[in-house]
Length: 103
Image (cartoon, rainbow, N blue to C red; front, side, top):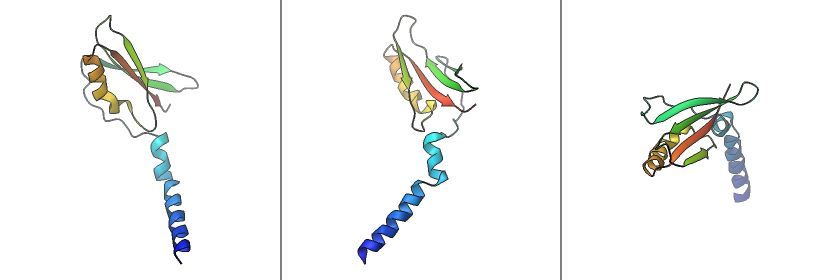
């Protein structure tokens, strides 16, 4: 009976999407690979509340250039955007990327 087989398969798929191994990815991002930063980027922490801090990376361009403040999420980390930071910097836009940090 094809309907029953499809239902069983759907239940198996649903369980896999709700497993802790899958659920941790969007809410607890992977650790960032640490490497030597360029001379034009700077990492810093911004205190929030209750012992939580937000990490940030600032890509410096010219002193009179505009700033672009970029927030991201969904399991991404700030290092995922290093290439775009360099592109914006080349266009004369200073860019800051913010990401959450576990206390």
